[in-house]
Length: 274
Image (cartoon, rainbow, N blue to C red; front, side):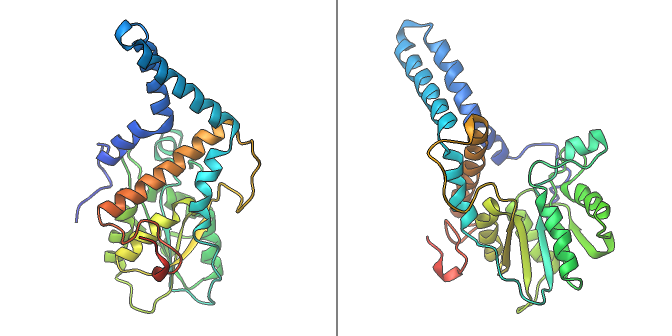
């Protein structure tokens, strides 16, 4: 089994995503378009690139595009009715900022820290449940599991209660490594805790690994319905579009790589849409 926790090299998917981020693409269009206008042969193409980039920024500044793209992801799995007993709770990494935590010496999160808070609340609601945190990505030294361990201890959840998986570099690793480690038995009830916008892809890979879980979405970024014609602003919309695009591309890539059985997993497996 490969060790993913201490690699200092970004993965191919991280490199590709860095190039495809909307903000980076818009910047490239602006700069590239400006440079092309300096030459007669490419002036029209440069003006076209600059015009498209400008129009895109205006649209993002005026209309809630980020909200409209994120909402289908966040609404896909509603908040569940929890049973009286669960065998275990899986908490996915992704909310920790390892580099800042290491350099500052203080636990730091990137906007998805609600996963940790909800995990502690669930551990108190289900005192006999096993708690498992999965997350590596230790390119800066600390892993997501290291920061999670510090956080849980500060919130009163002792390390003896939690199992930490610290090799996973992505959602696929979260599912496969955790399943192989725990080898859950048929009939066991497990909760899956991650951000609502990340839940469809997470459920897909866990199902593919052979694990049917109860999705417990947290860290919402949108209201369940309704939005005005204008709103959010450029900064909020750009962040929302970036986050949503990352997930939609992730869903497509995981389907193409056969890491999920369907393109957009549904609450009931038989209702999945291919």
